[in-house]
Image (cartoon, rainbow, N blue to C red; front, side, top):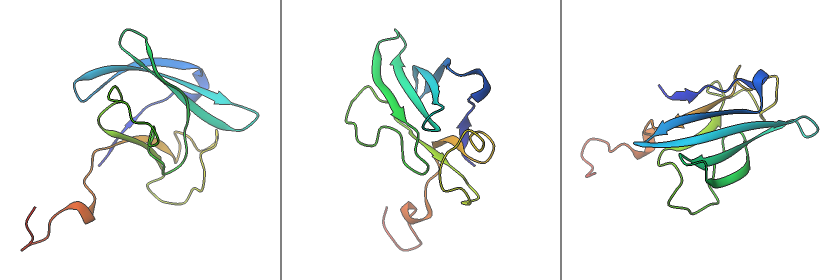
Length: 117
């Protein structure tokens, strides 16, 4: 089972520290009412910006288009584990869609009996 990052959407903008892979990061979540989407700003522990304004997109890993050694090691991705939602909205975020720490190995990546890993 995946862990998710709890975001209080009623308290946005919300900023908090989070430990990922033995590093502490600062996350700040925002909501754009006009476009009905969420963004996240990522800072290091000294509050120096790493990535600003990353839009949360369903089933798309955060920062997938960025190559930066300062980014968190685990993949972070907004998903609906029931696979019923088609996008992230204010109404479904933290209800049916959650920002998961995707540290669960997929079935395809696990070696089967007789295969070398």
